[in-house]
Length: 139
Length: 139
DNA sequence: TGACAAAATAGTAATCGTTACTATTATTAT
DNA sequence: ATAATAATAGTAACGATTACTATTTTGTCA
Image (cartoon, rainbow over all chains, first blue to last red; front, side, top):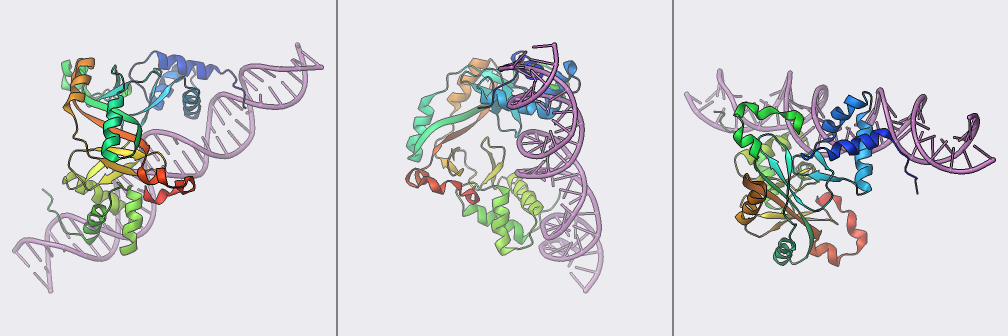
């Protein structure tokens, strides 16, 4: 029952996320928003990200690296994590119910969903020199 | 080049893990080993778990909940996480290369592996009363 | 307009899972 | 047995995230 009020910071966070297709972490978002709002706090970034996720406007992506990534694309799709640069990319495959059915048979209970994250070396990294490995800021 | 030396604690940790099929967390392992070794430290548990994983004797399982789970079964297989009791169960399906190939086509780069975690309600929970939801100690 | 209520903020402290450090103890080769 | 070194318990540090609080911003309504 709490009415939502506008905030520039929230708008800026959502707008920034729309410009990125690599599923940045809260910290990366924080550092980018700080260019426009130098004293935004990390807590504000986290609070707005989970608020937006609660509204269904963004998704929280867990890819098994123990850190939350954020995605402005809320249509169902899989992800790919580059082992070299760490970026998360979208995989445009339609999530399959067959997988759930297979698992359901194997387990003998109802399987309602699954998390699928691919890994390998992305196009950029496979053409780049190995020296470029540590571009951590793009995580 | 460091020679491995025997330790009772390590043996106990590995033996305990073999008795469990629900992929316990370090904390659950710690609390169970403490019954036998009351002043084992959590650090010792973590150190031995990663040592054993390095030796290929156990596996570290990441199922997207941000906590490490440990598995004494090192043969390739998928996992299932019960949304109610939180337990991780094995899914006896042979990991598929077809999935990697599909993703590889969609992305246009080499895909070498994937993480697949199913979710739903396990057999036990679907027959249990909803009051039994919070058996956190089995995580 | 302006004043009030509610929501959002910045800044900071707290929490949780995990890793690192250090002085002591246990294991193993000689 | 002794000496070398790995492993330990205990504790501190860490990084990601959440919680708290006093202040600021937003929206409503007279």
